[in-house]
Image (cartoon, rainbow, N blue to C red):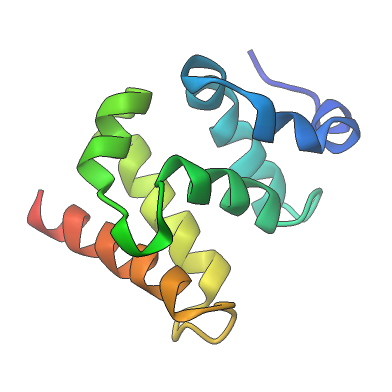
Length: 111
């Protein structure tokens, strides 16, 4: 079922309060809305960041297991993270954000 963009726009902070099941279901919709420019890309990015625990200790395989993401979803998350920080990391707010992206990229390459 597709989630109306207006719902995502009006309740964009809801993503930060969701449990694992809610995140698994709604994160893709929020990522798509961000890519389409309906909401800030930092809304799903900031949800992904806490999922990963410490930014410097992100372990994609643990996140994938806890939230039940399959390989295609993991690829989408990795691509989204890369999009948010920019191709060369020019939009990253910190070195820690870049490290998240690199860890996800490495995980995808190795798996």
